[in-house]
Amino acid sequence: MASLWEYANPVKFMKLSGWLLPVSAVLAAVLIVTGLVWGFFLTPDDYRQGSTVKIIFLHVPSALMAINAWVMMLVASLIWLIRRHHVSALAAKAAGPIGATMTLIALITGAIWGQPMWGTWWAWDPRLTSFLILFLFYIGYMALWAAIEDPDTAADLTAVLCLVGSVFAVLSRYAALLWNQGLHQGASLSVAPGTRMDWSYKGPLYLCMTGFGLLFLALVLAGTRTEIRARRAKALISRERAAA
Amino acid sequence: MIALLVRDLRLAVRAGGGFGLGLGFFLILVVLVPLGVGPDPAVLGVIAPGILWVGALLASLLSLDRLFALDHEDGSLDLLATSPIPMEAVVAVKALAHWLTTGVPLVLAAPVLAILLNLPGPAYGTLVLSLGLGTPALSMIGAFGAALVVGLKRGGLLMSLLVLPLYVPTLVFGAQAVARAAQDLAPDTPLLLLAGITAGSVGLLPFAAAFALRINLR
Image 1 (spheres, chains in turn yellow, green):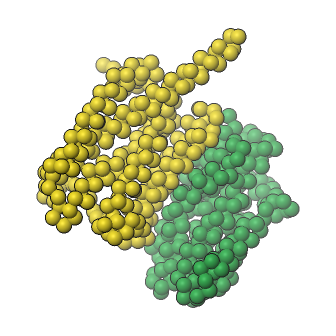
Image 2 (tube, helix red, strand yellow):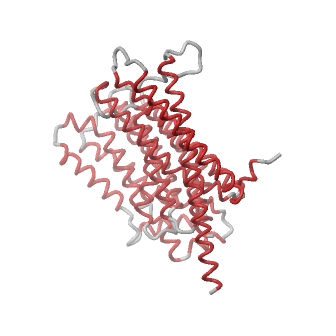
Image 3 (tube, each protein chain N blue to C red):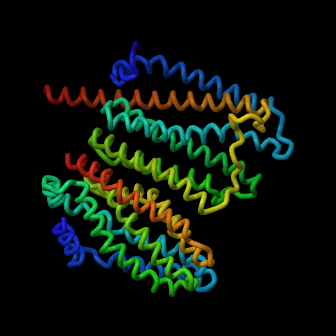
């Protein structure tokens, strides 16, 4: 029985991700396109919000992945700190910009929806504010990666930042609740019985959420593969220099 | 450890140490805000808690990049690392020295500057209390940020980018406590949460900061 830790070996990881990347990328494309076509063209408009509600098919999945990307970074950072697997550190590095982009997509789609619905592009609502702060955390994380030259030092320090940042990000989330009343609605989806959403909305939404998850997987795999190759190239160059 | 504390305090107080710079920055900020938003006492009274807390936060950030950087440059940080004192204690002592030279003067100056901003009467006690409870957290979180960037040539700007998001909960709870007191509401909840953040930061962050320092000294 192959253990998960075998994929900490870059060669095995490259082999696995070599076929997993195209599969997840194609699946993500199919799911997102199906979900968006279903949601945008086949689902009836909301009786009060009209067609603006359909931005939910982009907003909710990107917001979901914005948070999950951070969680993935946190897990990958922990694995790096505890077991020193380089692939894990590189995966965390690759997840940073993707998570930041997802956060930005969630913020922008939210603003586009909020303008006609709430009458404002931006409100200092706890959820919106927490997302903006999450975005700042992503920027700081990426800036620290970019600033340090030695890859192992950078991996260590960003991992610590990610751990401490996670605690403070959660604290900020609850601090924001104390600080202002919300304009953002509560969760529209729930596993509890009696959810309020019709299948004509839930169907495409689930498709898009799964699609965004796979898209995230594909992007992280692509980013990690690039990082591994870049590091291998660097090692080869220095070996050549040492030989010459 | 006490010798280290005394050394850091001396370095801060004597010429070139930057003692009082934070305080001066705080004063200038508080003077600039009314010049920017206009002298209406009602408006100033409403925004005073936020201004004072943001000012305290920026003023304590100002002197942080020197916390470990100077010692790192002249090699005394390596000596401290090889000394019998654990690195965690070094971090805690340095954060304490930073708090004594930056945080405490801010706490003492804040009520005076609050008069300039027309802070409502009942909030003065809460202002001093909240700053007194919150500034140790600012110093400790800042020490963690400074430890992360200690090896970098131009760490100052990057450090603000890393540290300011970490300051968010402290700022929210601190400013909320003062704002509630200014409206004659009970400030207990934010004050307790603020104390919790300080206790958590002081208790846990020395370990994270010491870990980061050890990596940087590797």
